Amino acid sequence: MAVLGTSLDPESAQFARDRQAMLESLRPFSELARQVLAAGGERAVDRHHSRGRLLARERVDLLLDEDAPFLELSSYAGAHEPDGQPGGRLITGVGAVSGTECMVIANQSTVKGGSLNPAAVDKQLRALDIAHRNRLPVISLVESGGADLPSQADIFVPGGRTFHELTRLSAAGIPTVSLVFGSSTAGGAYLPGLSEYTVLVKEAATVYLGGPPLVKMAISEDVDDESLGGAEMHARVSGLADYLAEDERDAIRTGRQIIADLRWRRAGPGPSLPADPPVHDPDGLLGCAASDPKRAVEVREILARVLDGSRFSEFKPLYGTQLVCGWGSIAGFPVGVLANNGILFSEESNKGAHFIQLANARSTPLLFVQNITGFMVGSAAERGGIIKDGAKLINAVSNSAVPHLTLMVGASYGAGNYAMSGRAYDPRFVFTWPSHRIAVMGGTQLAGVMSIVQQRAAERAGRPYDEETDARVRRETEEMIEAQSGAVYATGRLWDDGVIDPRHTRTVLGLALSATHSAPVAGADNFAPFRM
Ligand code: COA
Image 1 (cartoon, rainbow, N blue to C red):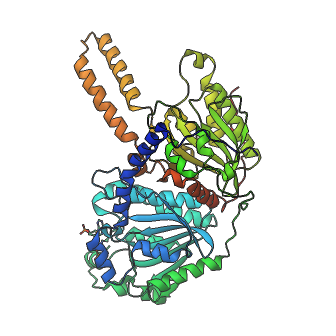
Image 2 (tube, protein in one colour):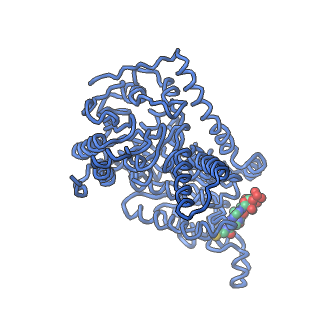
Image 3 (cartoon, helix red, strand yellow):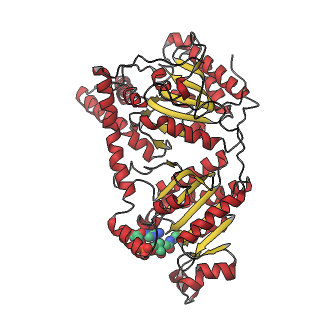
């Protein structure tokens, strides 16, 4: 198989500029990471520790196999909210427990009692979705104040889906385990209630539909926490607890034993190709995204630093050249790659649709590398049938059944986002570089289109057109769209599963691919009719 070369010059001024711009775009994420790791701040952490409790992150660390990597997801959920604490008061991610890759969901009770706000609900649902589609056992580390009461209107209805999903994935044969360390109240009680295995920590876990004050109010009964929903009561009387743990560490040990006893078998094939690192230094990835969005970047430079041994067997290299397609592997798992090298014309669309069908015929997962400003517009493209060719690509992407991983490295605009397996097209995982932009179109273009529309409307109505107002509105629109197109906003809203340092791309994609192989890997039997 051909080994990709490079023409990137790390000594050049251009490379230095691009690298610097990428490092700048990583900076806000260092601050967000600091906030997430602060876990609610010193006061909350000290109070928690003084009660003899472990932090959510400490619990996750102890649960995972020693030195096992943890593919943390949606780390900055809610980061787009101006006064929001990033992280969604939860930690979610994929990691090995007793040798089995699991989805771990841990409440951060030191952040607002671990209560579930809108970001937390979205993040928890996304974690359950990933677990379901990739057939990953789920372990919930529970300690939460339940619904975030001030934002109840935003979470009550969608939040109910958590319990629906939990029982659905259990019905699909995916094991669910709850380790309860503290409060698990009201709706939250259904987390252990619907899990297949429950472990409750003695003198710490409290699980009830209504706490003592509510019971007093509703039925005038005086009752204490322990008798109402303590671990001993649930282990000896109600039967909700399958295991009574002496302390937190005992609960984690029991959780690890439950997973070991599953004797879980992955349903997908193991890695089958050599997993040697790329021949080109991954540090070069910092210079692989143009600091000026108008300048084209060569996507093969990225592939050369991500694929095993930089090996890439390109498909149709002379046709539809702005969509690079071909076969390679990551961490030994074969992948078909579709990577943008410019906008999509009819040829690129047809080539992509063909390639996706081949990957499905061979049951090979697909990696989409997005840097796409959209499909070609204009009369030549329309007459050439760009709509029906784009529809073929969207049909192929939508009905493809092999796992998709999507990596956004630059622009992700318009229907290009859809055709390249954007979030709405159910890729198993979506990761982005901090420099990426995501929107219907770029801010300048969008503001320009709105200006033309308004100018025409004024002409039709016989109103004078005020150039000064137009310039101001254009500027404001552009600023708003730019702010909503950036990586912080996008990841805050969970349009992706994480923003990654470009240098970690191969590691992250390797872990994600491994997770997808917990489920069977099989191609689609059927696509919708392709419009010819
Ligand atoms: N919604 C919003 N905020 C909540 C919350 C909830 N359900 N539960 C706790 N919090 C906040 C508190 O206001 C406090 O905020 P602060 O840090 O700004 O002061 C923080 O979380 C810690 O709460 P606190 O009560 O001081 O901590 P604790 O460890 O002593 O107790 C709980 C934690 C969860 C046991 C307790 O807060 C509680 O019982 N909460 C209400 C649970 C409930 O009835 N939920 C209804 C679900 S439908």
